[in-house]
Length: 115
Length: 113
Image (cartoon, rainbow over all chains, first blue to last red; front, side, top):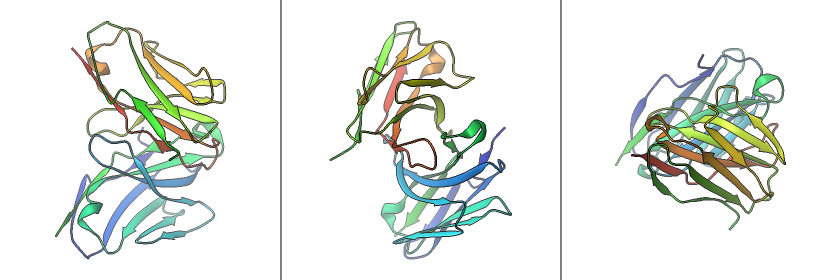
């Protein structure tokens, strides 16, 4: 039972353009969402998070949007840079229930930004 | 710099030979986690410590155990590694459990021969 899904295994974008990475979840108890970036042979690096009381959070070039009714979140990177090329993981946690304090990860999306 | 450190970065062991992976943190976080990640898959939580309170995931094999002797250190013990245990093992920490960001170490790549 995959509670967090990233349906696009890969995304290719031109430098300077917008990258949009998508994530869907099924567990209505999830109320905290995060995006991580991972380079090969390294651990995931935290990028940005959003609480379910918000629908948008912005940090520099990175913006996360949350649509609770659709159980969908997205990460926008503007403008995209070649150094953004990595695997991006969406993750979710809950402040109650069996997912309390645990991160459930999506499968990841490989982003490639071409110069 | 405050950080999560994992040693070694690469570990080779033999089938059935016990192996221990270590994690330390300078963030003074209450919670420490161990994840297993296999190629092209999402990280999978094995267990976590909330302070000294150990929490095992229901589907974590008995072959995997953990120790947290103090706030800063946490160990993953694999008693009898099988070929299927070859993976990247990630340690993470968070200040608390609820609505908190987890910070990851660089991981230990385990190879079982």
